[in-house]
Image (tube, rainbow, N blue to C red; front, side, top):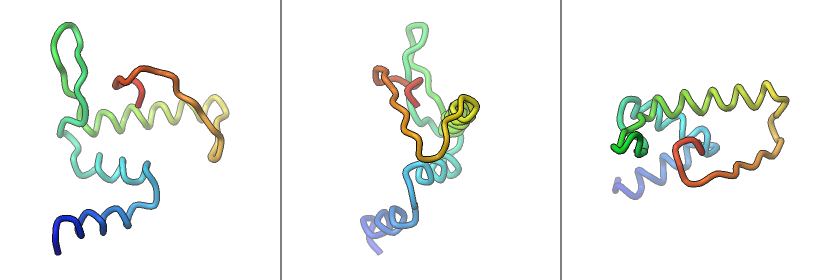
Length: 83
C-alpha cells in the first residue's frame, strides 16, 4: 500500500472532522500541534492540550444551550484561541 492509499484509508475511516481531530490528538498526544508567540517567544501547544481546550469550549457552548445541529460562528484572527 502506498502512503497515499494509507492516508485515503484513514480519511475514509473518520466520519467527521471532529472525529479526525480527536483521533489525531489521541495518537499524537504530547507532540506540538500549534505554536503561538507569547511574551516574545514561540511556545508549543500539544495535541492533547488543544483537545482539552476544545472539549472545555464545547462544554461551555453546551452550558449556554448550544445543541447538536445548531450553528455557531467564530469571529477571530488566526490564533490558538480560535480552536
